[in-house]
Length: 171
Image (tube, rainbow, N blue to C red; front, side):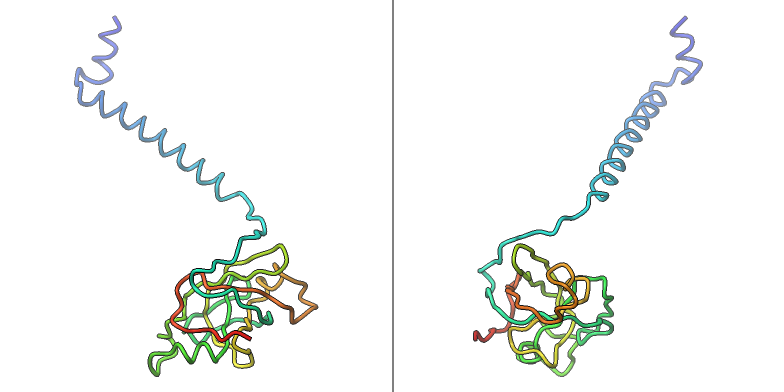
């Protein structure tokens, strides 16, 4: 009797039977992956206190200020909610390889900023005209992770997370 039910359901075709069970297994695997991804993405990121890397230059000390990002010197439009920064015009111009500022090799490089027991990784998207060589200008959201906005200007330590094509002068 059991054999008859199986023959009716799959028409006696073993290929259809295997395909059906493989489809069920694939659907279960996909469901597990979706749930795992949803759980992983829903975890909140804590404010880290990561060490400053020494391999690519630094650590450097300078002033940390904030600005309202927009279309930066790298040709990238950024928002105040993004982890972005502007480096000193002195560094930016020293790394320049041509007349197009959008092609500056510093564009897109990452820095780690550290203040007290907090650290934030940021991406270079702009050039800071008023900054000294080791000063960093960041979006408001980054500044808020390291200091109170009311402070306006604070000390910060930072280092390149990638090899930078420019030598940063020390104080």
